[in-house]
Amino acid sequence: MSALAEILFGGLFQGSLYAMMAVGLALVWTTIGVFNFSHGVFMMLGAYIAWQLVEFGLPAAVAFPIAVVVMAGVGWILQASVVRPLIGRPNIVLVVVITTLAAGSLIENGALTIWGPRSKQIPALIDGNATIGGVGVSLHQIAIIVITPLILAALWMFLNRTRLGLALRAVAQNEDASHLVGLNVTALYGLAFAIAASLAGLAGIFMGGYRFMSPVMGSDPLLKALIVVVFGGISSISGPIFAAYLIGFFEAACSYYFGLYWTPAMLFGVLILTLMVRPEGIFASRSRGLA
Amino acid sequence: MNPILTVEGITAGYGRVTVLHDISMDAGRFGNVGLFGPNGHGKTTLLRAISGLLRPKSGRILFDGQDITGLSARAIVGTGLIHVPQGNRLFPDLSIADCMALGAYSPRARPHEAENREKVIRLFPKLAERWRQRVRTLSGGERQMVSIGTALMSDPRLLILDEPTLGLAPKIKDELCASVMDISRGGVPLIVVEQDIEFLLELTQQLYLVNHGAVATEIKPGESLDHGEIMSMYFGH
Image (cartoon, rainbow over all chains, first blue to last red; front, side, top):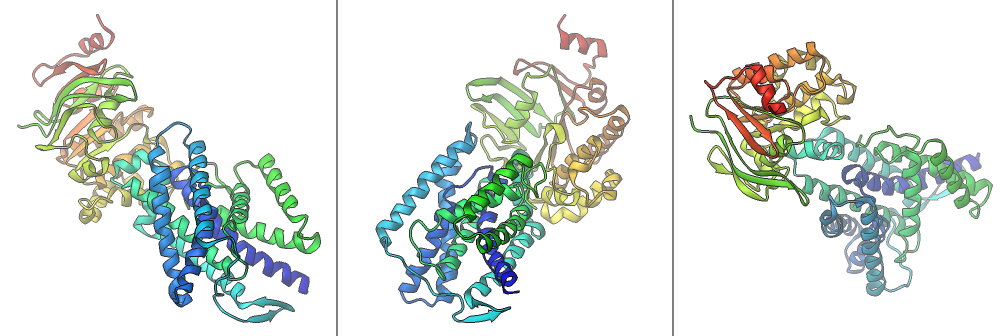
């Protein structure tokens, strides 16, 4: 019983973090058609900004939202500086991989210079522990499990029930036609990056509340998010969300039965298998579009 | 009548390739305008330059007296100059309802959204039956109706149609031609690119033969031509 509870809990928790990261990657891919390799750095930067604000004496309830909003600005600026100028060039996908990697590296080393290599921690969302189904869990992790689906549902509502969300979905499907109905395509690109960066920053704040932070804390979650989007299909945002939880459960089960050591190898095994059997991802339709 | 659109000496192209060479034309002096000519000679490029998808290298475009050269496509949509691109690619994974909402996105069109929606449904009753269906699941003719419907939602003061009947079966084509005539009778001036000369002769009052990125011939009302003469313009003598 406690084995199942542990896997279930671990899966939900990891899945939440992966979903938060993967959705941002998918949002940027579907709207702009580029892959953002500085996404992991967004996560780190969100956590550090939150830490800094708490250090300045702000309560967490104020500091965290500010950090998320600041991250939206960071995402917008990054988009405007290293993505937008390249749009329309040949090989845009590859070129943007390089520019976002470069920008990510700069930000990562900037963080190292500003905040130093020593590990830090930010306050948990809720202090304390609980025992559920014979498994001891922290309330912080419970909070993440509850909050993440709410945020993802809000994002889904935004994309599917608002005019601005409709505009974002439209840009994802046909850029010329979007221009011709009068959409501000550049602003929508910026918005996609801003939302993605905010979500990544929030994931960073979640992570910084239970694990030690370092300037390279984003690279492993970025890798996992990549696995998630390849597995779930990057052409929608619901695919990666389901995939994130599946991968979360898979990882929890693997580390329970086979140990942490084998888990990454098995994850990549799943990834390779997916690429061989269904290269567009298991939840993907064959077209690009947000839904 | 004064022209609603004037194109003065536009030169434009893609990268180093120049497609339009100092092309001039106008629309609205006699009614609807038809553009015809061989493929790959700049008709679509001219439309893209007019609607702001492509920035001309030189020349001037005036819409209703306002200089719109170099304005963004969004700003041009805001003036009421609406362009329906070729090939009804549109938004494959959006529903018809979504497309209509997008058509009414510009602040100019939004107040008239409900009234324009009624107009579109009256013109294309078929769309109402499939209102929540994704565009990719529709037939070619229906997709073209969605394209034109979306443009009507933008409350056009001038409507540009790029080969609206391309690839359609004859019966559907006739239906669509009738709808386009309806739009014209409803008071919206048109610029239409079309390979079907019969349709153009019926719909438009002023014709331009576009060849090698320039206007080869302008045909004004009273200079009506028969089918044979136009064919010889197309294929040379």
